[in-house]
Length: 193
Image (cartoon, rainbow, N blue to C red):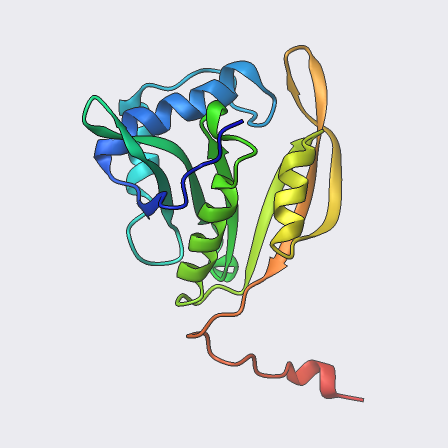
Protein backbone atom coordinates (compact mmCIF):
# COMPACT_ATOMS: atom_id res chain seq x y z
CA UNK A 1 0.00 0.00 0.00
CA UNK A 2 1.47 3.37 -0.95
CA UNK A 3 2.16 5.79 1.87
CA UNK A 4 0.64 9.24 2.10
CA UNK A 5 3.29 11.83 1.22
CA UNK A 6 4.63 13.72 4.21
CA UNK A 7 3.66 17.02 2.61
CA UNK A 8 -0.09 16.44 2.95
CA UNK A 9 -1.62 19.87 3.54
CA UNK A 10 -4.06 20.28 6.43
CA UNK A 11 -6.14 23.44 6.18
CA UNK A 12 -9.55 24.79 7.22
CA UNK A 13 -12.39 23.42 5.13
CA UNK A 14 -13.97 25.88 2.69
CA UNK A 15 -16.95 25.82 0.34
CA UNK A 16 -14.74 24.72 -2.56
CA UNK A 17 -14.18 21.46 -0.64
CA UNK A 18 -17.89 20.81 -0.14
CA UNK A 19 -18.45 18.32 -2.98
CA UNK A 20 -15.49 16.17 -1.91
CA UNK A 21 -16.47 16.34 1.76
CA UNK A 22 -20.03 15.33 0.90
CA UNK A 23 -18.81 12.44 -1.25
CA UNK A 24 -16.61 11.14 1.57
CA UNK A 25 -19.40 11.36 4.14
CA UNK A 26 -21.95 9.78 1.80
CA UNK A 27 -19.68 6.75 1.41
CA UNK A 28 -20.02 6.12 5.15
CA UNK A 29 -23.77 6.83 5.06
CA UNK A 30 -24.38 4.31 2.25
CA UNK A 31 -21.80 1.62 3.03
CA UNK A 32 -21.24 1.54 6.80
CA UNK A 33 -22.84 1.88 10.21
CA UNK A 34 -20.08 4.27 11.31
CA UNK A 35 -22.57 7.11 10.98
CA UNK A 36 -26.23 6.67 11.84
CA UNK A 37 -27.40 8.90 9.00
CA UNK A 38 -29.30 6.64 6.60
CA UNK A 39 -29.88 8.91 3.58
CA UNK A 40 -27.15 10.46 1.44
CA UNK A 41 -26.78 14.25 1.33
CA UNK A 42 -26.42 16.74 -1.47
CA UNK A 43 -23.72 19.38 -1.14
CA UNK A 44 -26.45 22.00 -0.70
CA UNK A 45 -27.83 20.04 2.28
CA UNK A 46 -24.34 19.88 3.82
CA UNK A 47 -23.59 23.59 3.36
CA UNK A 48 -25.04 24.65 6.77
CA UNK A 49 -22.86 21.98 8.42
CA UNK A 50 -19.75 23.34 6.69
CA UNK A 51 -20.63 26.93 7.63
CA UNK A 52 -21.09 25.92 11.28
CA UNK A 53 -17.32 25.24 11.42
CA UNK A 54 -15.52 28.59 11.00
CA UNK A 55 -11.75 28.92 10.64
CA UNK A 56 -11.38 29.87 14.30
CA UNK A 57 -13.16 29.08 17.52
CA UNK A 58 -13.84 25.74 19.16
CA UNK A 59 -15.85 24.25 16.26
CA UNK A 60 -13.41 23.52 13.46
CA UNK A 61 -13.35 21.67 10.16
CA UNK A 62 -9.89 20.68 8.94
CA UNK A 63 -9.32 19.08 5.56
CA UNK A 64 -6.35 16.98 4.43
CA UNK A 65 -5.29 17.55 0.82
CA UNK A 66 -3.08 15.26 -1.24
CA UNK A 67 -0.32 17.33 -2.86
CA UNK A 68 -0.86 15.33 -6.07
CA UNK A 69 -3.66 16.83 -8.08
CA UNK A 70 -6.65 15.57 -10.00
CA UNK A 71 -7.87 17.86 -12.77
CA UNK A 72 -5.64 20.64 -11.39
CA UNK A 73 -7.42 20.59 -7.99
CA UNK A 74 -6.02 19.05 -4.81
CA UNK A 75 -7.62 15.75 -3.87
CA UNK A 76 -9.37 15.74 -0.47
CA UNK A 77 -8.13 12.77 1.56
CA UNK A 78 -10.37 13.33 4.56
CA UNK A 79 -11.46 15.71 7.26
CA UNK A 80 -11.68 16.15 11.02
CA UNK A 81 -14.21 18.19 12.96
CA UNK A 82 -14.82 19.51 16.43
CA UNK A 83 -18.50 20.21 16.92
CA UNK A 84 -20.73 21.23 19.82
CA UNK A 85 -21.11 18.36 22.25
CA UNK A 86 -24.62 19.38 23.37
CA UNK A 87 -26.61 22.59 22.81
CA UNK A 88 -26.93 23.77 26.44
CA UNK A 89 -24.58 26.60 27.45
CA UNK A 90 -22.74 24.76 30.22
CA UNK A 91 -21.48 22.24 27.63
CA UNK A 92 -19.73 25.06 25.76
CA UNK A 93 -16.23 23.96 26.80
CA UNK A 94 -16.79 20.41 25.49
CA UNK A 95 -16.60 19.31 21.85
CA UNK A 96 -17.38 16.13 19.95
CA UNK A 97 -14.66 15.20 17.48
CA UNK A 98 -14.63 12.93 14.47
CA UNK A 99 -12.56 11.97 11.45
CA UNK A 100 -13.81 10.76 8.06
CA UNK A 101 -11.38 9.63 5.38
CA UNK A 102 -11.65 8.89 1.70
CA UNK A 103 -11.80 5.06 1.56
CA UNK A 104 -8.48 5.02 -0.33
CA UNK A 105 -6.74 7.04 2.40
CA UNK A 106 -7.51 4.85 5.42
CA UNK A 107 -4.70 3.22 7.37
CA UNK A 108 -2.06 5.58 6.00
CA UNK A 109 -1.67 8.19 8.74
CA UNK A 110 -4.07 10.84 7.42
CA UNK A 111 -6.37 10.60 10.45
CA UNK A 112 -3.37 11.07 12.71
CA UNK A 113 -2.28 14.18 10.80
CA UNK A 114 -5.78 15.62 10.95
CA UNK A 115 -6.21 15.00 14.69
CA UNK A 116 -2.74 16.37 15.45
CA UNK A 117 -3.64 19.62 13.66
CA UNK A 118 -7.12 19.76 15.21
CA UNK A 119 -5.93 19.34 18.80
CA UNK A 120 -3.15 21.87 18.25
CA UNK A 121 -5.74 24.40 17.01
CA UNK A 122 -8.06 23.65 19.94
CA UNK A 123 -5.24 24.39 22.42
CA UNK A 124 -5.82 28.08 21.66
CA UNK A 125 -9.53 27.81 22.50
CA UNK A 126 -11.47 27.59 25.76
CA UNK A 127 -12.13 23.86 25.37
CA UNK A 128 -11.82 21.52 28.34
CA UNK A 129 -12.91 18.08 27.04
CA UNK A 130 -13.21 16.26 23.73
CA UNK A 131 -15.61 13.37 23.23
CA UNK A 132 -15.83 10.80 20.45
CA UNK A 133 -18.72 8.46 19.72
CA UNK A 134 -17.53 5.31 17.95
CA UNK A 135 -20.06 2.89 16.47
CA UNK A 136 -18.89 -0.65 17.19
CA UNK A 137 -17.07 -2.56 15.95
CA UNK A 138 -14.47 -0.09 14.66
CA UNK A 139 -11.02 -1.10 15.88
CA UNK A 140 -9.12 1.40 13.65
CA UNK A 141 -11.05 4.32 15.17
CA UNK A 142 -10.57 2.99 18.70
CA UNK A 143 -6.80 2.73 18.08
CA UNK A 144 -6.65 6.26 16.65
CA UNK A 145 -8.50 7.76 19.61
CA UNK A 146 -6.50 5.82 22.20
CA UNK A 147 -3.28 6.99 20.50
CA UNK A 148 -4.45 10.56 21.17
CA UNK A 149 -5.12 9.90 24.85
CA UNK A 150 -8.84 9.17 24.73
CA UNK A 151 -10.17 6.69 27.26
CA UNK A 152 -13.34 4.63 27.07
CA UNK A 153 -16.02 6.00 29.41
CA UNK A 154 -19.04 3.91 28.46
CA UNK A 155 -21.04 2.13 25.80
CA UNK A 156 -24.63 2.58 24.72
CA UNK A 157 -25.80 -0.89 23.68
CA UNK A 158 -27.97 -1.32 20.62
CA UNK A 159 -28.58 2.44 20.50
CA UNK A 160 -28.95 2.71 16.71
CA UNK A 161 -30.55 0.59 14.00
CA UNK A 162 -29.15 0.59 10.49
CA UNK A 163 -29.01 -2.10 7.81
CA UNK A 164 -31.67 -4.06 9.74
CA UNK A 165 -29.55 -4.56 12.84
CA UNK A 166 -28.76 -2.77 16.08
CA UNK A 167 -25.37 -1.19 16.77
CA UNK A 168 -23.53 -0.23 19.96
CA UNK A 169 -21.78 3.13 20.35
CA UNK A 170 -18.79 3.51 22.65
CA UNK A 171 -17.96 6.93 24.08
CA UNK A 172 -14.40 8.11 24.53
CA UNK A 173 -13.17 11.17 26.43
CA UNK A 174 -9.98 13.20 26.35
CA UNK A 175 -9.01 16.17 28.53
CA UNK A 176 -7.73 19.12 26.53
CA UNK A 177 -5.06 21.45 27.77
CA UNK A 178 -6.14 24.90 26.71
CA UNK A 179 -3.50 27.61 26.57
CA UNK A 180 -6.23 30.23 26.98
CA UNK A 181 -8.81 28.80 29.41
CA UNK A 182 -9.08 30.32 32.87
CA UNK A 183 -7.92 28.09 35.69
CA UNK A 184 -10.72 26.12 37.25
CA UNK A 185 -11.73 27.58 40.57
CA UNK A 186 -12.53 25.19 43.37
CA UNK A 187 -16.17 24.34 43.97
CA UNK A 188 -17.02 25.93 47.35
CA UNK A 189 -19.64 23.24 48.04
CA UNK A 190 -16.93 20.56 47.95
CA UNK A 191 -14.79 22.21 50.61
CA UNK A 192 -17.55 22.26 53.24
CA UNK A 193 -17.19 19.65 55.92
